[in-house]
Image (cartoon, rainbow, N blue to C red):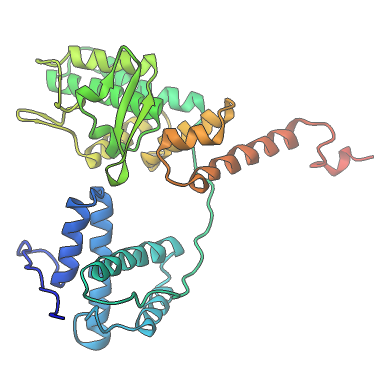
Length: 333
């Protein structure tokens, strides 16, 4: 059998060098598999780090077809000595496993040498979330900023604040990832039916209900634009000419400003809004399967962590309020 043809490689001159198979995998990840920009960026960094480690240890770039299980075991030990957190090790090996699946599909290797490489188990951390009152303060923060300016803001600043208010309302109303909200098109929003079409990870689509406050915020934002978005135009604009959606990174940075204005921790990530959405639904009596569908989780186990959040909160309330909870030894007979 002829050996597989090596793909060509094009890199910006200032980009860290990675081999051509790794570059082809990353191209495939973003184009054919529809991975998010965050996933592609994280996987690229993981492969660059592994390649740098391999060059340092062995004086040459990795030859994916000849690497053995012991090579990756050595890499695990190296990451452990550097005190990389378990989640960081898992992420790096997720990138390497995906790369080997790509290489197997193309006949470069017959099996993955990462199989059965023992990794530290990922610690289960309960997701942080905002209370309903805190979420209300946060989604109100962009309009509070406008009121503070008292009409002295430029038109572009006003539109940006109205956009942010609409986007935050939508994220919380629908449990979206920031990247999903930024990617919404005008045609994805069914105002009459109060539903939106969401493109999630891997290009999977789902329909999600959207609440009246979010629709009102979107309508207020669209009325402030020179031209109301329609069809395939972005629902939220980063640039108006040509029409471009905002980047998730820009929204993340602006979110820090609104968190501070709402008196909340500015280091909270946008994903905490998604955590809050799920937790508040379960607190209100929603069943786990419904929350799974709304979030677009492929596996129910991913959603189940939110039940731990609500259970732990109920335990705390019980311990604090029930006269015979057992939390206070003095209360015992």
